[in-house]
Image (cartoon, rainbow, N blue to C red; front, side):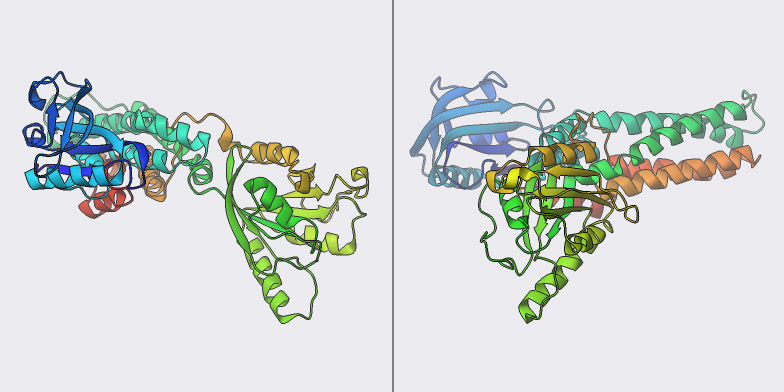
Length: 457
């Protein structure tokens, strides 16, 4: 493959900047832009050892003093000869170094091209490649741990175990179908059925993680609802850690939805602070209230905020009834810093689904600890994941297709169908698993995956 190069640390000024290079012949090409203090060419340096030297521009002039390290293939990230230059993180220096590499014969790497080469050279499968971008995009420690485990092959090993079992079944059935006259040991249906059951159970276990995967990757769509001046915007600001929304003592300050992504109890919440839900004749407020209802209808979680320093009103009851229409909702008794927090007494309405929790907070003082604990308990994605979590639609659909095909194969076997009928479903399951790991993935699927990457990774 040709030599590619890219700045791996972005274009903002940083303490250290890194330029990556990979491809056949890249080490000799890089001699044009780096002069080691030892005078030795890059190909003669000790692999995976930092070496001090001068960075050179396209005219051979020194532009920086820094470090170079080589990674000869196939024992490199991409599986081919690679090198990195670590210099001062000046955007000017990085651009000059990159231009010198282009002048020497390299070309600009595309988004995710280094990782794509690792996949094409067998260093990663698609689940591990997707874990790279998940790790880069991780916004919670749980998401980072899950991605790191997948990058280490945890998900691949689960799917490989199923693939190996199905391949064993297919091989035995092919022998019977293709060589009926040969003295081939009999197939014991009960053994094959047990193997198919185990394969289906593994796939079912992985599919059961889809909800946790959505929480890790996308976060939880969360609507903050309540009457005007209940403290919804103060709660959003407390969770965000800065003044994201305007807060005043005047009811109706928030007239439109305000969105912010926060980490609450180790879980990423996509918060939507809504306009206070109430009857109004103001045309602008009416639009805001309608948008609030729409946000609530599409949310996965509702935080029903009430003034905890005063008795609950019938209007509060209407808010709770709306919140209870969400798949999950938490009652937030706010303003506990006023009146000793003794104003509101929540008595569950037997006509409503119970809230997941009823918590007391003081959003104005930033005291939202009880809410964080409730969210953490409600969405256990914050617990240490082992990497066996399906985190995107592509993985989920491929695993679902494989599970359905395995189930059909088991039903055909139990019904006494001929081996070729069972083989059809086993092969369909293998095809789905191959697409999942990349063994049989179509080029457009592969290209779509790596288009999500940043340049330099």
